[in-house]
Image (cartoon, rainbow, N blue to C red; front, side, top):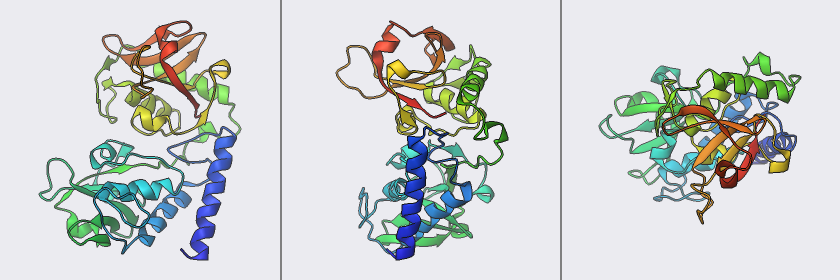
Length: 302
């Protein structure tokens, strides 16, 4: 690593750490003080720096990389925790509408015949090029996207450009943003629940696509699934719970595992706003209920 690269990574790390400590607005990642262009440029730069590293199945770096693990590693370097499987990453972030709309930092997915489930993936770095860890070539390589257009399945955007979210400027009180989140969520009351619902639809939601959609409309980007969402923002205790906080829950009160299976938004006044089962999007009582007893983590992203 060159001195310049080390300085760039260190600067981004300091900016991100400071933002999280201050409880600032968090996207999938990143601090409001880090611009969209800076972050995606850093992602592209890190991906490019790995060209030539050996391919190894499911290797997570830094010396060898699997296909999905390359993307996982790159985003980890800028403080963004994403999944580590191709199938999981194919559902995370926001879908890019077409191959012509891809931007630096987007994750690209391909299959050998251009249909079905993705079998390999890479990180787009701009200028019509992407980087991926190639099993057939045995190393991380740089390729032209145009040469793989027939194998292209789709792209997902991990980092969102929030420069047009002027309503959530740094001077906007967090309580106002929280109220906005709840108001947005309320307009979806009664919308049916569907496990694995697409993040691109508002006709149905699962618990994490609901929180992702509501916060997105309030100008805050969250990862796609609940466990990924639990890695962003600032951890808070129950006694400091505030409206707009995200509540992450295990499967049941008696579950011996703290594996996160549900996420809800604290709506204030002892209530949560979330979606599950037959009621779909609904309010539920929180204080003293099994919902409260299932909580394993609380995160503040506002």
